Length: 405
Image 1: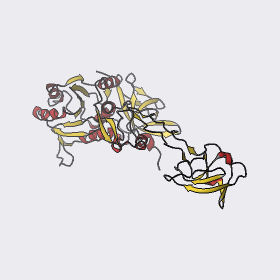
Image 2 (image 1 turned 30 degrees about the vertical axis):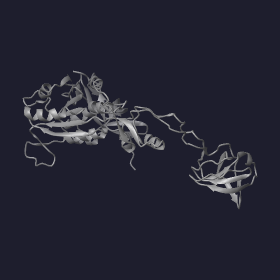
Image 3 (image 1 turned 45 degrees about the horizontal axis):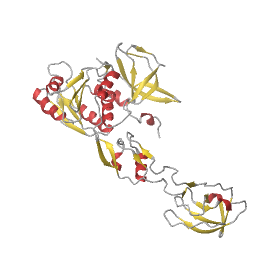
Image 4 (image 1 turned 180 degrees about the horizontal axis):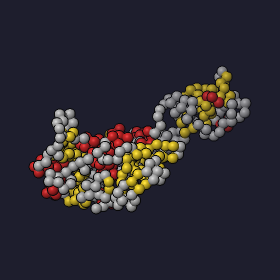
């Protein structure tokens, strides 16, 4: 039975990127660039003004000098050369005209009729954006493997890019299993349970940026399992929930084996989520998660999400880890790592970790309060308030939510 880290290494060892596709620039957000992108020209392409002011020759800007104002240049308009002893009004972004080598902001100038005097010394190239000062022609702008965000999109748009090659997203199929399940919106009779796993796992897949194929619910018959799993194995990743124990109606492993899935492990030395199973068939990765909604979401965060991100071309796929100080004493079974749902708060520059509530995996509301998972090492059984622990964030924006507006 592998540890959590060992299970993740096994999974990532079987995970590959899935080829590339060309997408429109606006659709590349949070995708991973599959090509090196170079600047097609100098950026900016020409010297231009960084301020609204006067374009001047620094040699003319001696103390008490009065320069004749001979015109106005706006952004995108034709330029007016600056003659010796003269100045030209210029707007931000406008091209620096021939003869000029500096810009004096309006607030540092005093225009007196047709003339202007300056309130401070003028330095060469002040408030001038020189051609190529951002990027030179043929300079690498974005390297393959970069996660595309708004700054990358802005840079590519500035280079007149409308399409970009990115790594393809895996198609992820999700299947719930069990006679007791009903779809959300259906009437719930005694003994029946609404299938929350399907939609919660789908939401987590979508948060990664991958498309989802919902297979619905497989009933507790071999025929129902075969019908739906055969479809799911055409996807890049198949995720099932429940039916992975050794009960009479736990058919998931048996049917997947008959369908040609080769299993790498049948359980993980972690709580919650021990029954987690992982296998492969041809190009497909297969994750069999526990039926408990809390356990399935926790295992998705730790083991499934990294595989999805790696398939999408991400280089950093393990959950973001921070160090936080426990605020309560806690205990667990020795010999197995425990993933404790915690709520995080800043106290000055110290990050505090509070229990998010009752840790039973049957208590969903604890997950509603949780910001992260504290990793309690397997070798110990008790932990004291004041100890520092590693916490995996459940969302990359958790720490942004600590301050109220």
